[in-house]
Structure formats: structure tokens, C-alpha cells
Amino acid sequence: MPAIRIPTPLRAYTGNQAQISVHGATIGDALNDLTTQHPELRPHLFNGAELRSFVNIYIGEEDIRFLNGLETEIEEDDALRIIPSIAGGN
Image 1 (spheres, rainbow, N blue to C red):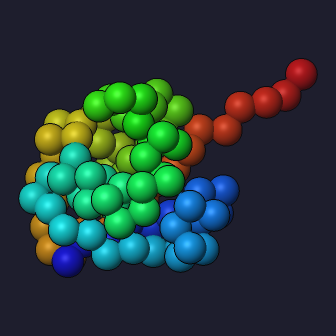
Image 2 (cartoon, one colour):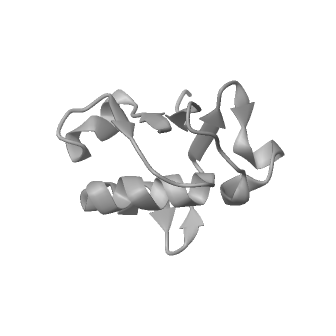
Image 3 (tube, rainbow, N blue to C red):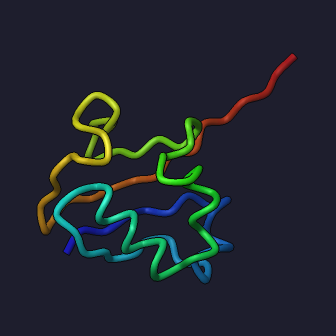
């Protein structure tokens, strides 16, 4: 089953788990399963049905924005990562 790596700032919403196994045939399915398991995480990832613009999802080394977005198909052994954008500076 695919697993999603959770970044440190979002682990407060996953019971401090760094990695969570999910079910689904697509990235969207996997994220829906993740947010069903951990509902407090949903508003940090989604704005309605759309992924927030500052949330990047990777399958392996590929950014899903350059694939099929939430419709990107996944395999049982895929490793997914949530990478929040970081802003700041002068």
C-alpha cells in the first residue's frame, strides 16, 4: 500500500506520525484516505476540493503538477511526499 511522508509542521495533525499508509488508485484517492484518517489535516492541504497552491505533492522525485495532478495514478509500493512551500526573507 502506498505511504505518504508527512512534513514536520503537519505531524501535529497526524498524531506525530512521520509516514502514513493510505489506500487509493490516484493521488487524489490517497489524499482523501489520508484526510479521512486524520480530518484535522484536510484544511492544511485543501481549499475546498482543490489542493492548496503552497502544498506540493511528490511521487518519488516527480512533482504531481507536472504529471496528472490529483488524477496521477499510483502503485502499491509508491512513496509519496507532502512538501509545503516555504516563504520568507527580506
